[in-house]
Image 1 (cartoon, rainbow, N blue to C red):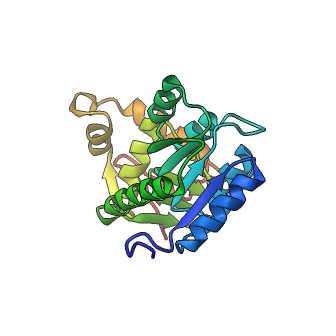
Image 2: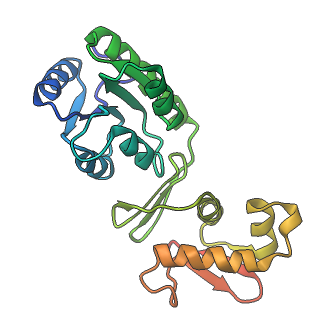
Length: 234
């Protein structure tokens, strides 16, 4: 019987062994979970953005890239719960996976009952986080999920540095409102930087190159001369 809080969740299973994927698919579907499958790292990254799963079960021994690199890549732009399911039982592998952002680590061979229990825990944590989450802000083909720190353009994730994301989050949190230079500098860099307007010029320029089709004619981050910037959603 499915858990009322997690039943129907979409699970991405990443494993290069067809029999493992088949076993997990059958077991998860029997508990009312929806299942998406990926046989390698590139398929996993694509499925993360296209299928938008609620949780990932990730094997580390993939044919095209190490599962740890998949983990690091996903953590650049998503907070989706990730349970590593691997034959690697060494403590250093577990520590490395957890340090890179895994929510849990289960070694093969494994018991399905234990995996399901750990899966429910991770999903519940995700649901708790979502209850307190910020909204998703969209403008044209640009989407900013403020709870998951996920920025996508035309459906593809955009890599941003921490400061670039913090600045974009500030814009997205005040859509269509002019934000003064000093306010942006104070909130993103701190009170000691309120006169360092060159910081803004550099980072706004970097954001525009990553987000705008034509950075010289920005659609999203608009300059208000002598005042500040405005994030345009309409």
